[in-house]
Length: 235
Image (cartoon, rainbow, N blue to C red; front, side, top):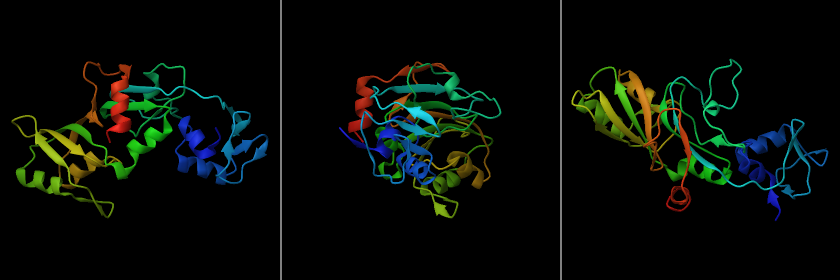
């Protein structure tokens, strides 16, 4: 069945649908030897598609869903010009997958990979407010006053953050759990930094209800059918 080229390539983990549209504008994609001009092209299995001269298979691939317990000191990218360790050094699969969202170099915890572009777009889209839970260890105790300020929302980049939930884990009030429904760049660090707190350690413990329980740092596993169904149908 013919499928729009932006969805077709997004499902293969090349880029988001919007990213594919940008590729087309920049004339990076050819179909059957002709530079693609419009994003509405419907792909057929007989088509020969290239991006920057590299051929993209039009054969359907089974969807793959992976959970990695990301370790420290690796970056969330497929390739790094500085030859640093990446999250792809820790997973070993025969199909191309991409991470759903990002974690900073020294942030650890739950990171999901897939080649299911539709699900990835759904989980990352702000409209669906997917919950992410982090455990943060602060440089000093969090006061009750500042806790309430952060929970109500603070201003980052001239825009207020959505309400979040903060819970104390340790009696010293430096070990906290933070549940958010956004995914702004370095959001947890920046929220606390705004009120004079440093985040010394940060671990993502939950993503859309999934945890890394039973996985050591640097280890990964395939999601179960039940877990995949929960991501697809229970949002």
